[in-house]
Structure formats: structure tokens, C-alpha cells
Amino acid sequence: MLLRLTLIRHALTDWNASGRFQGVADVELNREGQEQAKRLAAYVARLEPDAEVYSSPLKRAVETATIAFPGRELRLDPRLKEIDFGEFEGKTQAENEAHPAWATWYGDPYERRAPGGESYAMLRERAVAWMDEVVASGAPHVVAVTHSGTIQMLLAHVLGVEKVRW
Image (cartoon, rainbow, N blue to C red; front, top):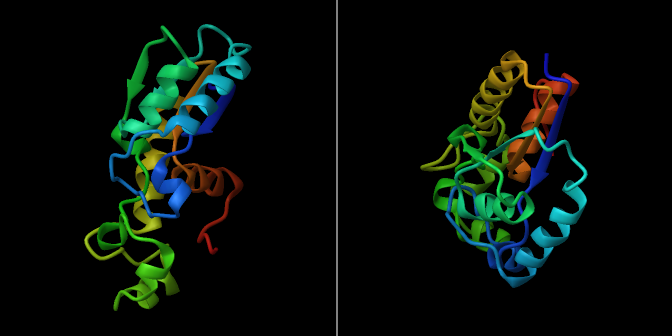
């Protein structure tokens, strides 16, 4: 039985710093993000050396995991990706608010798919499928380097929050 699950959000990117929606866009860490990952490495060095380390396959998560867990095997799993924001990707909040579909999607992003993307319910379904699989594996400790939305959906599931509202 899984005894501990450690969830880590990737470090900073230029898109984070400028307030752009990243979603599944494959954006790399910036210099500050690389420094954050190095500081994270000092912290996670205390984790069991046999903890299984999973990562979203997106560059910002892989780079964070590689720096934070040097020499460790990374298990990449696409179910750990961030939500696909579709047409909202790469744009700021203000730019998205000008999009004709924004108000409708933002009214219920849990149930409604972003245009050309997915809903938070879809993200939750795939992330929980990943978590159920690692729990069933019997690993004593699993670390996942992933994304804010993915972490939120996993926590909502664990806490029994049926329909997440922001």
C-alpha cells in the first residue's frame, strides 16, 4: 500500500512570470526556475532514496525533476500533464477575457472544455487514474513533479471535493 505521495509543482518559467496560460505548451524553465529547482534538490535530498519519481513529460516538469533528483530514474507519464487550455494557451488573463468563449468557459471550467482543449473534470479523470495505478503498485513512497492544476485535481479527489470551484 502506498504510504506517502509527494506532489511537487514545477519551477518558474517565463510564461509563469508574465502571467501566460501554459497548459500543455512545452515551455522550459527560466534561470530563476533553474535556481528554484536547485534549492528544491537540497530539500528533497532528505526523501527516501528509493522513492519512485514520476514526472509530467512537459519540459518544465522534467527539467525541475532532473535538477531536483539528479541521477534518479524519472518515470514520465502523460496523465500528469497540466490541463490543455486550448485556444487560451500562451495568452494572458486580459487577452483571454477578450476571447468570445472565455466567459462561457470561465463560468464552469470544471465541466466545460476550453475551446480546443479540455475541462478540469477531464484533467481530474486522467490524474486520478494515474494516482490509482501508483497506489495499487504498492510503492511505499511516490514523488510526482507536475503542475498546479493537476495537483489541485488530485487534492480535490483525496479530500472528496466533487466539483471544484475557484
